[in-house]
Length: 208
Image (tube, rainbow, N blue to C red; front, top):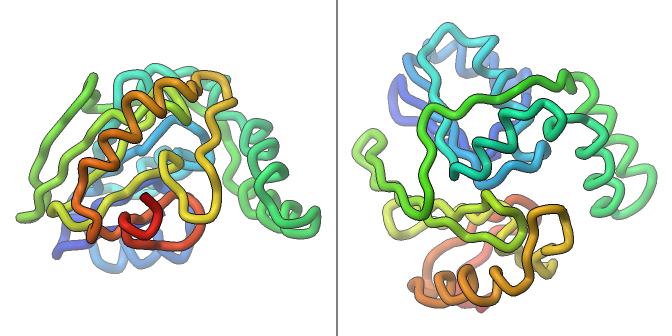
């Protein structure tokens, strides 16, 4: 989860349920929370309903249309799916159990509804910041990258530093990733800082 806070407005990318962060939001008396989803997998969406239910502030969710369709189906938001992904990516069984325990405290599967969805590109302003979405299929049908002020790129699972992008999950496509997503990523300024869904932050040029 990544957070951009400007005064009483907060932007959350791939929200994760976090009680400490929730308490901070309440203390700040935020007026609006905008949640951006890089894709539909539940380890990137689990916090949406958590914050919507816990905060009295206005909230909205923005994502690709394929992501919106997937998260509206409760079957795609189950903890079992999260468990499978965690066990696959965790360093060892002990680490997996620890992460799963944290997830299960808030694992209450429910539909997630998007307020704004797009097909290929979407642009918006947030507290003076420029935000651009671009559809980047391959890891999933609804994957997208989010570019903030042309300097910071939130890639979800569409580009990681130490791990090749996984395209074997349902909805994934190696050919789409190579034909559509990689050319887009390679077209960007190599000095852009990349904030991935997992692992370390890095400059785009160090990976591509």
